[in-house]
Every structure is written in C-alpha cells, then in structure tokens.
Length: 296
Image (tube, rainbow, N blue to C red; front, side, top):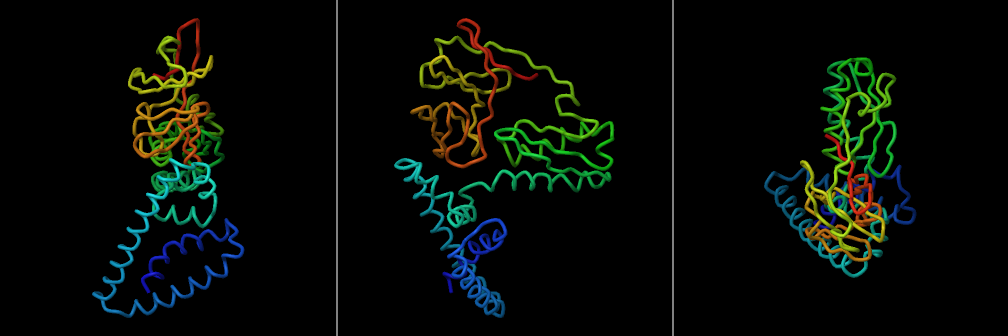
C-alpha cells in the first residue's frame, strides 16, 4: 500500500501530461498502476482519520527518503558525468519525478502562465486581461494587454508594477517584458528609461578563463574574459540567487558553489536545467577599458 500511495503523486504528474508527452510502452504499466492507486485510495477514504493520518505519514516519510536519495544522485552525476544527467532529465518520466520533488523547475512557459494567472484577477477587476504572445530565449517575453488595459493611459504603469513583477518573481531569468499592444510597443517605449555606458574595469584586471566580480550602482556583476571576448552577467545564480563569483570556472563553465548549477560563460545558458539563463549585460571595450551598458 505504501508503495502505491507514494507513487500516486508521481503518476498523477505523468498522467496530467499525457496530452503533452508520449510514454509509449510505459503507458500501459502506468495506467495499471493508476488503477491500483485509485482502488487503494477508495479503500483509504473509508478509514477513520487516525488511520488515514498513518498512511499519509508513511507516504511523507518514504517521499523524504526518495528525495534525499535523488538529491545525492544528482550531486554525484553533476561531479562525474554532467552530460549523463542532462540526458536523464530529458526522459519525461525522470523529469516528472524530479519535478514532483521540486528538484527541477517547471518549464519556462508553465512558470510564465503561472505568473500571468497570479496577476490576472487584479487586471480583470478593472475589465482588463493579459495574454502571452511569445517567449524569446534567453531573457525576453512578449505579452499583450487586453480590454481596458490596452487603451488605458496608466496601462504602462500596470504592466511595470503588476505583470513585470509577477513574471520576474516566477522567472528570474526573464529580464525583458515587451508589450505588443497597439498603443504600447514595449516597456522601454512606454516608460522612458535612461541607459548609459559605465566603465567597470581594465582588460588586464580580468584574468583569462576566470571571472571578476564588480559592484556597479546597485548591481553586482561578473566579467569573464576568453581571449578578446568579454562577457558580463548578473552575479546571481538563476536557481536560488546565490553569488556566482565564488564558483569554480573550468572550460568556460562556471559552477555555483552553493548547489552546483552550471552555466556556459559564453552565452549565459544554464547547463543544469533549461530555460534559466543568466541575466546578461552588453559589453563594449575601448582600448584597455571595459564598459557595461546599465540602466538608471
């Protein structure tokens, strides 16, 4: 019974995604297990509260054990064979189990829809709404305000204070939210903003194949030099926001010291979990001086 109770959550995650993924040969076995789970749940539903509490407690204990084992397995694979880990996560069943245990983030599109659902009641209370138009990796989302929000003079403020904050809360890798309404072409055009180039370092201060941590204005950034190419990112792991500058850099890949998430310093792409790239900054080099484009 404990086995079936435990796997109920896993299988529910998979069955809910049947329209999105193909499980092929696994499906028959999954359907049989789901039938068993439903049968046991019907039995448990007739138990008294104390008996049900025992079943739930056993389920939670086994889940905690499995999560600890999976966490250790992931740590070992990250250290010994990262490509094998990425290949394993590509498997729909493996991904569903890790997602159930919160060991990977939901897909970017799903998290954006969650953010929009969170802000939608506020917009609808003013006869407005918001729609997702497009996702443009690694850091841009296009949305459309509808209803009264599309014509309201204060819709730009609504976008900035509501939709933008909701999306960035759920998707920290997204740094640009662009409105495609008839009256608004983008946040930058709806709300005047000033950008400027700020000198942050000299080339010789950035060690080859390493990162240099710099604080500019109210931002913490890291600079990486590979030959003549210099890249700049927000000094924050997209996983939980821990600083990256203490991480190990090897073969143009930086590994966060806190939870071993890895990023390609050439592109900012996360190699551990897709869709959570680092926030990047535009870089310009004049002579020996390195400048970064920042916004007031």
